Length: 134
Image (cartoon, rainbow, N blue to C red; front, side, top):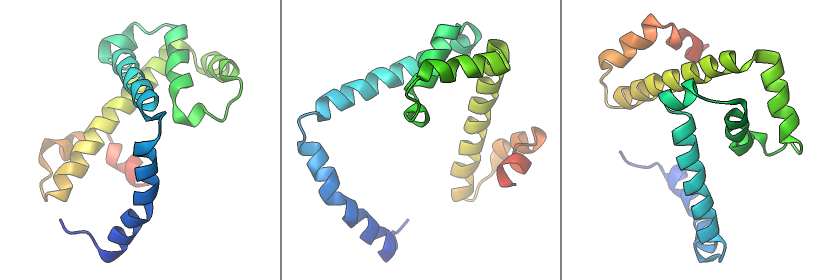
């Protein structure tokens, strides 16, 4: 795949910022934090982790998400989610979300190669394509 001129220009725009990041002294701490967060999320969001997830662990997942950074009181956010939905419903929703993500990512990868295979059929069976397209 070849990049367009516009894509190349956009990449060139961010090269100086990326170089400054690579030279920054806090880069190692940032990478370490990302690695720890990735390990935690992999463990907690695995099939087994979701099944055994406690309210505290759910709070750890939500608190670690980029989207929750704007919440000064993450405890309130977590408590509100748990009170409004219940832990068991949140576990089901997370499981579905992760399952759909895997299917849709396979469809994207296969469709960029001109191949649809079973992922497309699986998504149609689950009505995921209708959800994703609309």
